Amino acid sequence: MKMKKLIYMVMASAVMSLTACDKFLDVMPDNRTEIDSADKMRALLVSAYPETDYMLLSEFVSDDVDDFGETNPNSDRFIQQVYNWQEITETNNEDVEKLWGNTYLAIAVSNQVIDGILSLDESSSDNSKKDLFAVAAANNLLPEMAEALLCRAYNHFILVNMFCQQYNTLTSDKDLGITYMDMPEQGLNPKYKRSSVKEIYDHIADDLALALPYVSDEYFTVPKYHFNKTAAYAFAARFYLYYEKWDESLRYADLCLGSEPSALLRDWADQSKMTQDEDVITEHFIDAGVKSNLLLMTAYSCMGMAFRNYFLYARYSHGNYQATNEDAICLATMLGSNSGNFYKMPPAVYSATNMDRVIFWKLPYLFEYTDPVAQIGYRRTVYPAFTGDMVLLERAEAKILLGKYDEAAADMNIWLNNISKTKWDLTPESINDLFKKMEYYKWDNSTPKKALNPKFDFQEGIQENMLHFVLLLKKVEGLGLGTRWFDVKRYGIEIVRREMGPDGNPLKLLDVLKVDDPRRALQIPVKVSDAGYEKNPRGKSTDSEYVQKVEREPVNF
Image 1 (cartoon, rainbow, N blue to C red):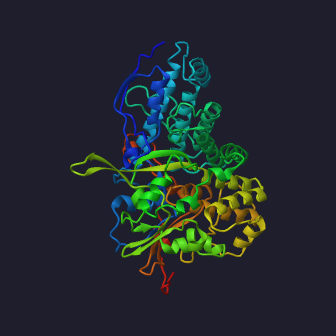
Image 2: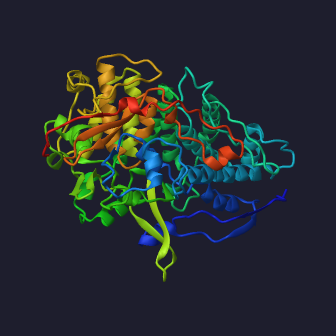
Image 3: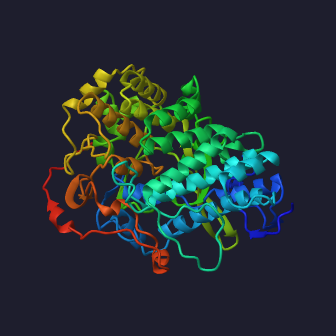
């Protein structure tokens, strides 16, 4: 039968070519169409990928940045609220309201496609998965069904991990989740209740189980901008890792990486031979031809400035002290080298008045002109939602949690050998030795060894220390991409807010995000809660008890 519903919507940005700077920002025209064919469903699914990224929020609430003080003018009220784990009331193209609204809009598109498939058969009485499978198969729409389900699952995954406490088997059946939308919105001004975190994860698992057998790469013009098979397996590997189902995570990571995981890693050696220009390197980083990029997304985003050599938000920055003591430079030092000799592409170090930043060149700064004459428009970027490099480290983490230490070490060696100039053959014992005598992190005496307090069990000694190592590698790999926040939540890592002194060293402790701090879940957008949606709980602030001041001698790096 033919669908009766008409869909009016502006389609989201799509990548149409790979030859010019604005290639990333081409926009499809308005479409008024009956969703009654595979081609129309495919066109609509372009909008099932959100155009607001989570990266700025998750990066600036994590321990990837420090506060360089009130004398640094490169800040605003929005980023101050983000950094200080406050309720975000300021507006921005990457604020919580935009993230919430655009992600649910992408979910609505997925549901509209699913509803469209069901509507092709009048005998489909409801939105049941059994009916969906049968109708999709009968109309040769299984790949479209799979993409819609994957997009729906992924978008809920982002929302539940940003706006809720981390999934765990102990409390998630009671922790506030979000609303899992599995059908188009019905009626005017509907009221929604929040499910539990466990219920949301269970729904995502159901959608994944139905979608994964039918993912296809065949109908995509540029597969890297859709949930192709490899990206779908990467998503499943991450989801089950967060779901504490280590065996399932390992299974899908294996499917993603295949028998030669190094073939899906970023070619740092090749990148080091390119013209060492930020724009050249960052545009190459997100090129669809790069095998490591499994799924690329476009977004209205300033992340191409916030983690580059721009002064935007430079008050809150990943500086030299943190890099030297906690992650990028520290990794090289731990392994007996320095960053210049260790990395095939060393991190860029910026040091100037009101600028202390150590970064890897990753995301491009793109600009979409709405008025070329007036030179106004929107900041944009393209980012890899999943990469082969991160899947490899997530597989290593799953293996550690399963007690497969030798196999985990092998995966971490593959990652190290790819990013480093040196050939590595670390063993579980040598990794254990790196951490067993290391002091735990203190706010004014940093190390990469931060106390782990997950809700799941792990063993002290070799398992804990291998977890420290893989989390360090993941922190380096995800720097500037927003993924560290999820590990902070999953492992109950306490992180601090500290003010850095004029010498670049810690000066003052401002706040601590404790293990069970309710601020680990971003607050629901104000407009959403004002409309009656239940807010996340917040405890009484105890900021003042953590405030200290230390005197330190300047240290030159």
